[in-house]
Length: 459
Image (cartoon, rainbow, N blue to C red):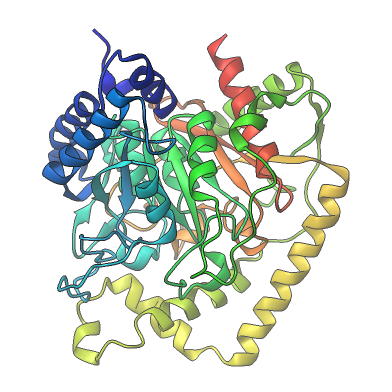
């Protein structure tokens, strides 16, 4: 008998269409899986079983009539507890946020899912206000890795990635301000996409400004393309959102990589120390791209680590996030968040604008780079998942989470599309991801290359 928790969204929709199983059966299976994994992994802030089953019953009736209301009718999805969801509190991992309503509005991406009949099974965990690259918070505790619960799931969309990896819904909405979709997707062995900034509208506007993206976490690139087709449409509440997509991302998937110019940068020009097991798995993935017809050259983008500029922008955003809180409420915050809030509050406007200058120059350099190369390929992470419950690996010497994720945050600064694809495991059985980056607005190329890698792995 088919295990419905193991099916992708594409497979679920196909099964609904053929009458092989129903949205109610799929939703029950996903809810049962979510309840089973929750005590050990802690991926959810809350599950919404009765509401989910009610939505699934209505979807089942629509499919029975042959009148599905959208492209995801009856498909179980999860939503990171950063994004507004009508009828549910959005607490952002914080004890400083009141659960009192009214919670009467959907974020744009959630609204598009609702319009397409998706079944919301729960809200997934986040560190407080999504501030760091691991998922633990004073509100909901520690989220753990599905491959080894003693390790971190990564963050800040750690609950979303763990849920997808364990079959608690094939589709998840995450957010990514410095790697927060790609880090946990890499650590948990699933697919994660940070689209071009503005492709997925965001409301309310993030205090982290145009670093903050909304993106899919899924089992494969085909599901991510389907989800992006649904959520990547304009919304009047986000003035910075892009116009309609130039075409269907799903329809672009079969394009493959033949003839694409791929730059392979194993360490950003020697700036990053990458563990041998990670480097080996990524190199083998690059060799598969070459075998599929891509023109691969080992080449590094021309930039130095922009971490200081990123910190100025990120810490300033954190200070803005909690600015409204009285001093007494701030004592409820994660101690690490309080530290960066303090740093952010000390920056001047000139400091902020100097960081913007660094960002603009980085964007220029990457724009020139992509005139020569269609894609840039790097490791997603230089390491695999480390001990749960800490911000940095013990003994690493890093002060903040950005120290161990140097491949991700540069592309939040530049707003480029970037995805992580699982390409193997290390000696401890922990997943390794490869990052694929394209020029702004070329999300289709990122998804095509990822889809090609999934196809090659299946052969």
